[in-house]
Length: 404
Image (cartoon, rainbow, N blue to C red):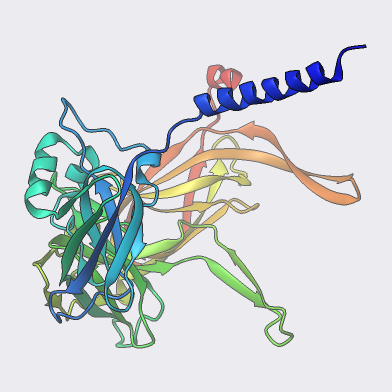
């Protein structure tokens, strides 16, 4: 039998060896410091209460676009100010950082930079940011002090009415921005890349009024959306409220600044720094909206197809305006179509059969495709309600059908 003392000594030595190996393999903690400061509102000189302060590491200069910093470098780099506008960011890895303050209604330091530049983050963009965005140097075990002042951002407001004078209640309002290349794109409804733009989406109130706060300088378009989805409420009196939303169309009809139905005709809104622009009203011309209804049939014998899609495209640029799915009788409907010239396009037409099955104590309905049809287009000029539009889809060519 082995000597118990030798056995105990071996266990102790093994444990010490494993502990030493574990310590040797452990990654050392990064050197960190602390950043403190205050944030004030430039227009009131009052503390910016509950503002978000974020530290973004200044990228190193290199050839080509600068890559985004690893997530590990961004940990513990955000804080919220207190009632005195003070903030503390602890355990910040050493290095140089941009200091960004965000508060609804106010412009963050990045608001003056183009979104495309912030996304690409070239050396030229970094140099420009270093001239206007506050920075702080974080040293090991040191406290760095920095203060921010936030300028009040612009505000856009107006009223949306129907042409009979009644307010357009609970319409979704969206903000769109004209980019450097001339394209007009939707603005993020929550926050743009740290630029501090909040409230790019809102709804009209019971008077049809809307307000978009925190808008940075630039050129914009405002749109109002009329939802086409249908809503059914159940259990209103019993307390077990249930809401069902469904629709067979594209979901919305939009009207743009200047009371235009097309984005290309919208009135551009020039927004300067800190401007309060009111009176940006829109009127929805009900008399200019019409209903288009029709049926999609098989060209071979005229029977209605029970599955497919119909799209309404502008005739000049072929941009899709609305779409509708066929019902089981081949019918489609566009409830609110502005007066214009269009192309009506039917695609994906099929003859299908519904098969009822009972599996696992449940009734299941499956749809079986019997025949597919080709696409068809027709010009359409809408000047009044239309209720007898017919599109006849041809048979799919044999070679194409075999490939499918």
